[in-house]
Length: 424
Figure 1 (cartoon, rainbow, N blue to C red):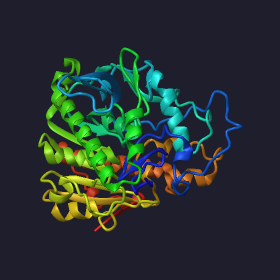
Figure 2 (cartoon, one colour):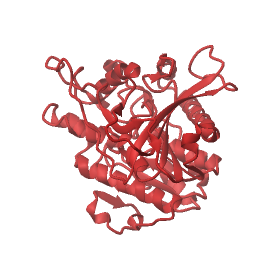
Figure 3 (cartoon, rainbow, N blue to C red):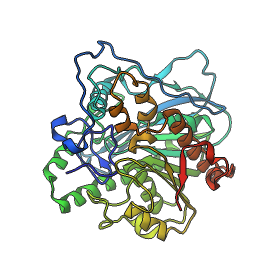
Figure 4 (cartoon, rainbow, N blue to C red):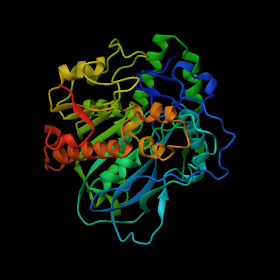
């Protein structure tokens, strides 16, 4: 299968229709036409560089708590002979009394090696150039929650990405006064670490995609299964929010729930809203909403065919696989059928992963990797301006539809300061 218009450049793996399956496959398995430029690994530092996530800009400090959720009524679709489905989620929230306390790491220690190897391979980086286990968040483990009640927003990553791959947006939203719940879809990411120390990879799912080959009908069936699994995972999370510890639920407003996601996660957010009215507003970051290798409009999802009553923001890229209502068939269909509020905003000079942590993190390697590698992954948009735009749009959207505070950025007020285009 060739890479699709919605493949995350960080994931050099088996992929179709934006549902990217991890980069933990040999580079030789990726089409040379769509591979990031290769680099020599001979000069990689022994300890690797430590990259820094951009600091949140909200009024609150942030805390992070992690939880294992188990669905005893659903067998795991990717782990053979497992009669239950288990997930990991992280909850980021406004916090107090965090001064002087250590921040959490972006990736759990036992999973970081597999995730890091995948990130290196997918981004064309020399092994060891980056110490992926060393990157810190700006959140304190199990910190006390700030007083008040805050809307809840779910985040789902692109297929093949771990739940921790968009701290740039997640922590910033939490610092603005939201409880943000990130979801690992076990069996998709290179590694998901559980509290008892066991780690689940994505071998069975990669094998399933390998068996599909160029069979388009089989690809559609498998992609539909991937999304069905994700939707069931999200229902589990929604159902269990009220069962989290009281130290968190006391500050969670479960009457105001939103969702956003990148790539397949953006598709998932929209489809969840179609199925579940508990989710009142959503953002799709560059995710197709159909089940085909080539985004051609032949296997559209329910949300693309029927639209939503709830508001949905589409945010698209301009790179190898551009997304807008004029070039992405599922977006065009959604636009025509949408009943609620809608907007389509393009991040100029961007690539697919410009909406994730890849944008600010890989930019720190400028001068150490070829410029062609950096622009292949991140586009030519300035990383700081891309982060500012992504944050401003996501914050403005949820403030408007979950808090009733409208700064009118989504109407164009102040938009000229960001590298964005409103698509009409």
